[in-house]
Length: 247
Image 1 (cartoon, rainbow, N blue to C red):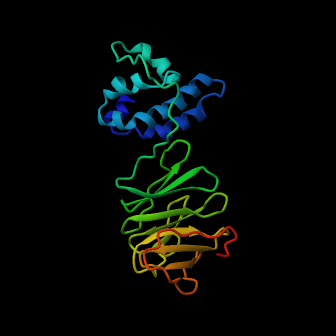
Image 2 (cartoon, rainbow, N blue to C red):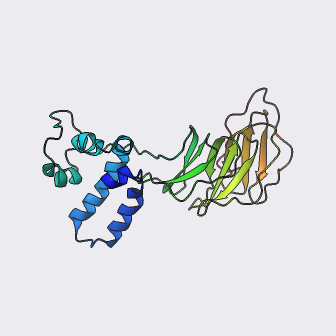
Image 3 (spheres, rainbow, N blue to C red):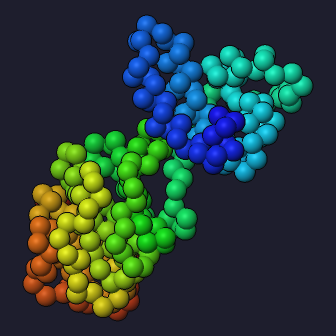
């Protein structure tokens, strides 16, 4: 980990540890536990250790939970480290950190099966994350030319599509498995698209915009269904379908 910190590559632990666990014999429960613990260790302390490698010892090891297998295996090997005498946690915190965006994140959503999290950001990208480890899945989805305001998964079991709305006035649909854009951008709004959602059957997409309108789109070809819904006198900041998709 010290070398990875110097190389600014601590995030490789998220991919390396699960691979290592696949190679380890299932009977080696202690090694499995340490590998899982290493992921938690980096998840919690990556920020501090990335800024300064000595924090690996001065902060991370010292403040690791009492029941951490990694701590139990390594702490006795280092002398003169800070000793926290009170207030240490017993287990790792349950908060999951997903790091990668370089600007504010404006929208997040879970996939229908709970395996993935999608996020949209002012850095103009969409990213997919492993909901259990916090590691990024694949490369960022790029194509929007302004901030991504809203993201959502399609309702099918594996959430194979992602829809996004942006300050570039467009809506885009993406293949979750490879990050490729499906078809052309949906164009029609004259201002930022603040909210998007799939219908329960996945056939339609609804959008709300700064242009004060709501629009419904064919999810497969991007064509607008009928005329814009007009009536609001200010921005439309949130949209959704009724459970039966009729409203």
